[in-house]
Length: 134
Image (tube, rainbow, N blue to C red; front, side, top):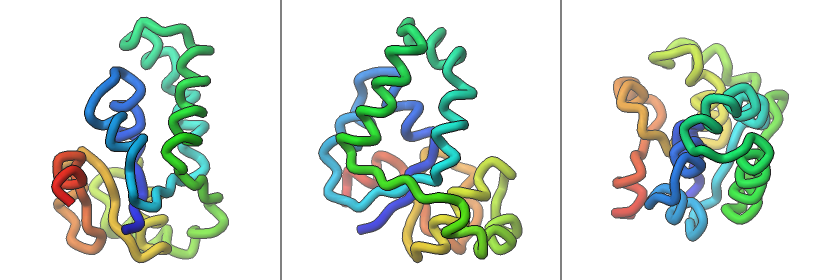
């Protein structure tokens, strides 16, 4: 199964060694991430550093390794920008537009623990618990 990974899943995996991290690392699914998420991650480095107690440099390295080991493919916005308008119409939050647009482009689901995303019915949204049950 193909899945777009929401930033909240990656952040949860970075904050602590959790089931989310383990599922990411052993996933049999094809995972995708909007390329801009790397910038979003860097913008949240100070906050994540505070939550984890890790230096920002360590977190950046952990993020890179997580992306690599999980086999997450980074997709440039240019590849899915044609779905932006449709995604804006269904997104419960503007921060979700790129993830929804990429899922629409790939015709796949979205892995997110954001309950608000489940309010839209165009893209199927799976929580970590649901991914575990698949």
